[in-house]
Length: 394
Image 1: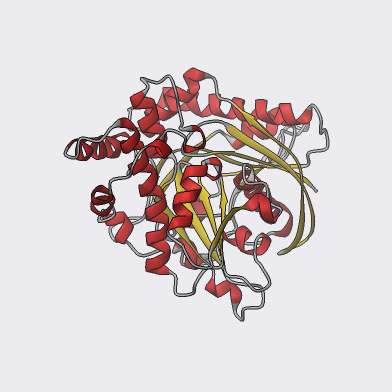
Image 2: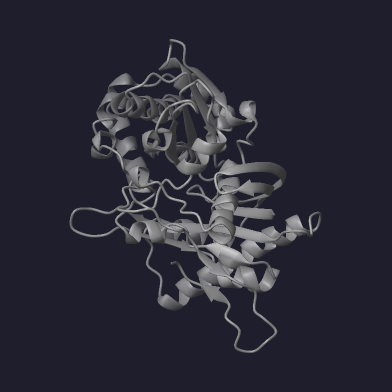
């Protein structure tokens, strides 16, 4: 089956669309990556998303308009792929997260991804699965990370212990035991590690008055020197001490958090390049810190993916925390496109929901009380009046 995965992450840099050919059954799948594109949001839509995700209040009417605008942008991404591939049979759309609240002892979690699945299905004439995170949250889960099950079955090694580390706006990891390990699925772990690119990107925008949006290859940060005292101070933040399952987002590591870091840095009179080096070091240190805290077995390989995998300075800094036999590389080096891995994952989650009727979450990763089918299915509007166009979760 030809499945298209759609994903836009915390950075809101673009909509990633990845087309894959999936063959096989249940967990025994073969994935062939056919095409991938990055489709940019219009500047006004992107700005509105960032404002809403940053806490700006919207009326219900304006929120509905944004929901529809995002869906139409996703449709544009689909149509762009369809120009060269007309055989798409299923779409898995993550949508655009604008709010994420992890569960607590007092209440369930809440998550909101905009980009209406029914609009995508009806305008593209392709069955669409969306709203993947809500079913996990409904049974007490974090709703994140959702790609751990996929990481474990597509990126495991016969003998080596691996960590698959996504570095988008927020970082998340999947601990992948080797294929030969007994009771392997029960040993898979995953959690959000903290800030990925988000603080670095926000700092670049702040320091350049919006002229730049990211530090290409980490070249700016590489000229500076990270402040060790600040790293130690920041790592004492509650989230870094919290045991998995755990997830986070822009609600914690956003503009307010960056401003706090900026104020802390004034004590040390850091240069701009030193400040960027220190924020980059926080991402690397928080990844290493979480592995050291929560993993019992030594890791032979760390596989990076997401936009941060292109930051050569960040990659070097992560490697510096693992001076022994641990090798830091990208998922490209083991056959999985690092730029589109998350979009590919949602194509597979859609396949599991629509074709295999297979639960997509791992309760030990998300904290859910049980395994769940993930996602709402939307069928294109039938020509026959009164036909059902939506299937809800079981």
